[in-house]
Length: 177
Image 1 (tube, rainbow, N blue to C red):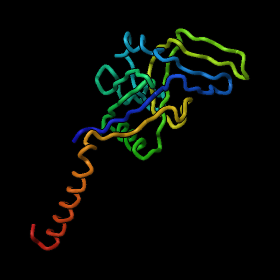
Image 2 (cartoon, rainbow, N blue to C red; image 1 turned 180 degrees about the vertical axis):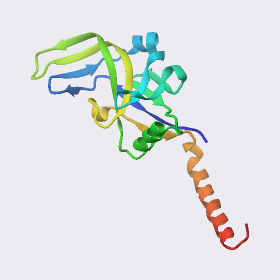
Image 3 (cartoon, rainbow, N blue to C red; image 1 turned 30 degrees about the vertical axis):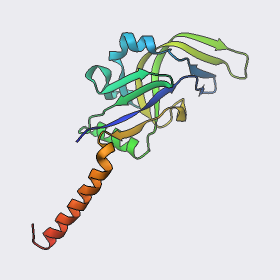
Image 4 (cartoon, rainbow, N blue to C red; image 1 turned 60 degrees about the vertical axis):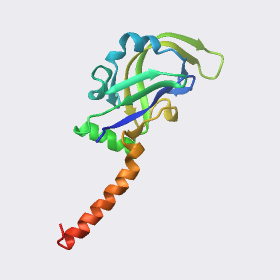
């Protein structure tokens, strides 16, 4: 059975985030391209920015990251046999955890101090990790959704499996099996 994976957007270009009431932050399209190109293999996915709780990493193939016209897209495949992987899968599948946050360092940025809050546009940044979180700075502009690779055929197959299981149970009750 194919392993479930968690995917979505960790950042959407030009989406504003209020950073602790101190400033508004946005990412420019392309601001992570250099980092992914030069250091993408070192990026990890963690549980709530806790590096002692890794879920996936690019270098072993359990994490994929790429930028597109929308933002920074990711797909991670946590180990479904590990307690942490099971927790991540269950928490995202139930909707308990549905946001993502990134850890990065800004290499180039532009500031605008003309509004009520200063505005920072990150034009180039180094991506360190991304995390499944309950409350991310970018909120609903980030996503974490569970997909099962067998979903396309999964509904019909699951229905057939349930019919078979009920029939087998009925046969066992009657001593047929």
